[in-house]
Length: 89
Image 1: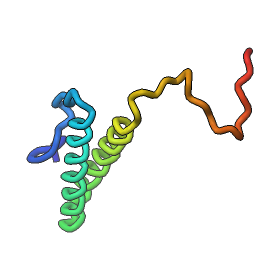
Image 2: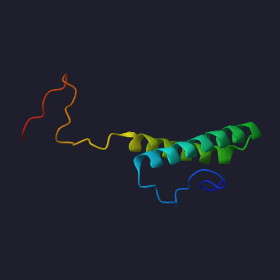
Image 3: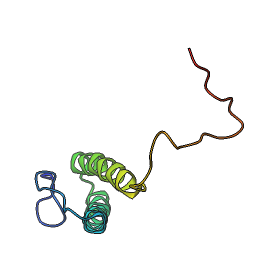
C-alpha cells in the first residue's frame, strides 16, 4: 500500500488552511484507512495491514493534534489543583 493510493489524503499533499477542512480531510483519511485495514485483515495480508495500522496511528495523532483548541496560551493554563505550584529556582 502506498501512502494512500486511491482514496483519502496522502501525506505529500498540503493540509487545508481552515481547521474545519483539516479535520474533515483527516477524518476522511481515517475512515478510508479503517476500511482498508478491515479489508487487509479479511484477505490475510499481514504486511499491508501493519503499514495501514502505522498510518492509522499517524493520522489519529494528527486528528488529536488538530482537535485541540487554538486559543490555548501556555502562560494561562493551570494544572490540576492537586499538584503543587511550581517553585522558582
